[in-house]
Length: 396
Ligand code: ADP
Image (cartoon, rainbow, N blue to C red; front, side, top):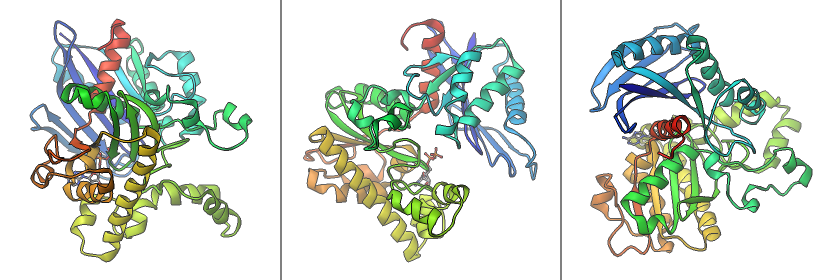
């Protein structure tokens, strides 16, 4: 029996999933986990398919442990867990594929060089993604590694959706709207086609609401436009990111308030969003449990901004047939979904209260003009499917 591993390596965390392949090469999940707080005090949890905890490990105060150290630990664990099954490939989430990488591909030295050149476009994500590739190469030089891009799902949007209103030459140099969360949107698009094929063929807004958050307008299962642009800072308000902001604010912070580019980056990426507005937490659950008015302000602004962006995307689609909620908040937070849908009532969305509270798949009322659904995302599975299709040359 053979196995593959999906890796999603971020700045302070590594998410991973192990899949074993059956005789038809269909992947079934064997274990999944996350290492968090890398650089501070790494904490690992691994669960099996039924959600039972297989491993919990704390590397207390070992802030010197690098991604490469932890990947080496994980690699050893995976080999013993797989008990003789051979790992035949690793699939990586790579945030930026730039203009050229429209589909997943095998990583070789040339590809790695080209992806390296895209680091300035995603300085907080891409270097960590690529560091994981290098760490695996050091551990197993002959193991095939596949790059799966977060930008690829948005690659074939209409040209207009990719443009900023700045001189053409900048667009030609790559300063354009790329869009992210593509692996999640692709997974949702496929799931929706199974759950409700008629809706999947129509006009749908998918709301990926986690720590990072964005919306995607889909027609017939393809991305038409999305709220994130050049970087994953754009669009919705997020856990610690500001989302869309008047660029004049950035100029003001630098020229009038004398903040350095580094300070502005930290402010907008790490100190804004739910955390900045509430002054309490970046975590939606913590905010809903807090009685503080600042926490409520932050939640109100979050739902306001989702409704505002959704309205913009509905006008691009020329109407909407359904809205799908996914990721940590979208899958679990009934109150936030309900507040968003109330702001979108003018579209004809009506939730079914009980279904919404229970995180049912269909949460809209049977009379609702626009369907509302909750579909759990699974970026790791999408990575696994892409990895298999690159390895064996057939669509999975
Ligand atoms: P990431 O972008 O880091 O993958 P997630 O998709 O895990 O983020 O989403 C994290 C967000 O989801 C947090 O704001 C958290 O409060 C919220 N969340 C996760 N689980 C629940 C839950 N059961 N109820 C309400 N909110 C939740």
